[in-house]
Length: 246
Ligand SMILES: [Zn+2]
Ligand SMILES: [Zn+2]
Image (cartoon, rainbow, N blue to C red; front, side, top):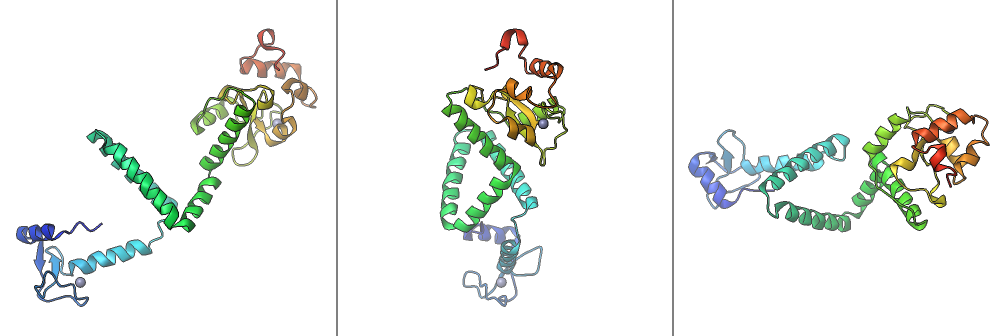
């Protein structure tokens, strides 16, 4: 943090960026046995007092806020871009050090680590990751195909379905009523891929569970042959080439 090496200060004194104060500051920051304190030429106060107060201020600021996290994200991204541009192993080395420091932090600040983890798990990103891992496990267990999809993929898929449950056509919102349904259930050989995910309201999804989609659909009061055909068509499953579905 403190880049003020004796050499840097000697250089600063020579170039006129730093100067000796008339006397030592009240905190007693004496510089190199001169009986005086150092100051920046541009201000009057003691250099080390101002560093200390800046550090104290930094320490007392709550940086556990969305605003600060955003600042850190941008700053880190810029730094990584710079390392990447420099080429060689700079970025690799940076990542290795980051992981090392992070592991150390997890051990030393177990409380903050738990808090960070809790916040991540409660976030949209964390919830989706959990769901995705669950799906992957379920698909792997059933021996099914699984292709990863991102939040962006899901957002564009959401608009494909016009934010409506594909079964009952109720409008769903991302906040609380929407869910992603594996059209052909994972337990019945369905794939964990974007193409097998359809937008459903919680009610339909919970009711359908891992039942045969066709049998379940036609047992519902809102079922019509026309809507079912339209859905199959949207999913690229025509009655001629894809039925029976399971
Ligand atoms: Zn001082
Ligand atoms: Zn529904």
